[in-house]
Length: 323
Image (cartoon, rainbow, N blue to C red; front, side):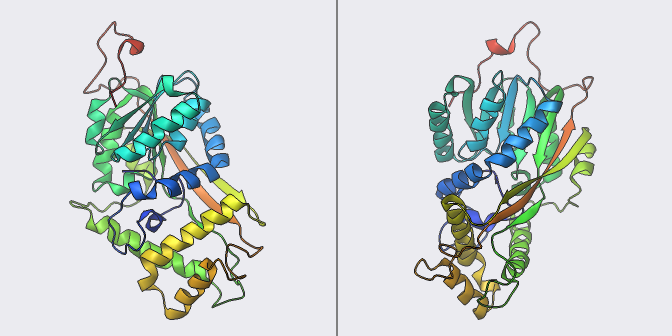
């Protein structure tokens, strides 16, 4: 499982080209996931500064559903005293994460763990001081049980940071001069239907009210803070932002087009046509605007854990899992 470092319920973007179901091939999405996370650098910088107020000197940071490791490596840079473990079910994405860690000079404090969540967390060598889960939880059938597993892997006093919710990205004005006004609002509606089907089709899916602070409390954690972070890249868009808008709209066209009428499909085709001056490749009004909501909760220092490091064993004596 690769986590989503970007939009709220924006998961059709992660499908392979031409897919219309709800199965997700994360490895095919590697380049897009990297671009999205890199574009969102201001959000992650602000988020990590905010997290440092609650977890100022974490020894072990675990990125649950890390994908290609863009954010994992940012954690290593933001917390120079920490060891970072990127956890994901897609080994090709973890290969990219390790290569990125080498390029960014943090490989000596960085490792990866491949396996399915939440069970793979049983392989952690010692509890996490900061566990980051960004849009990975809602891909697990029983979200409450997964949160309980996340909580159990926290050190006493450790922090769970859950990025869920927020608002979908916007790239265009309401009236773009072609097609009917309000295209992105209609895309949101189709995307929400897709998300509902995706959740329902997970084997053993359990419905939950998406009150994240209440869910965190229900698994024995103390909800501490919730804050939303804005990604605001105004027009005129950079080449990177423009490419991101094109890729995102292209994925939507591939995956949820059946839920749109012919006029909206034609408008999307024009927006994606590199030869059309009305496309996102050329038009001057393209921007990127989205909101990302992070909820934090802590494990009480007195709570017993199912697993613990042996007395007298320092964390540095206990290596991170092998690759």
